[in-house]
Amino acid sequence: MNINTAFLFLLVIAAYLNLYLTFKKIRMQKKQAKLPISSKEWREKMENENIQSWLSNRDRLKDRKKDK
Image 1 (cartoon, rainbow, N blue to C red):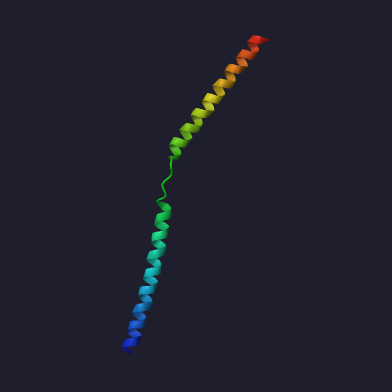
Image 2: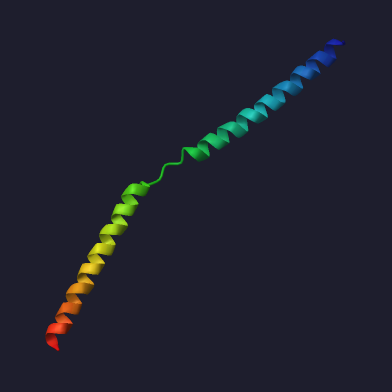
């Protein structure tokens, strides 16, 4: 085997290794995306808003019944 062939083989291996590591790094960055609020906090916020809305609607309906 010629020395040039060996160097070419090593160059090809290095290129594929570099490509693999680049894609792996990009994939890891996508997984580590930071959200401004967690899903648990979001769910609690939405539940609180729904409860507050429900309570205010309930109070308005009670006021309407009293007026009639």
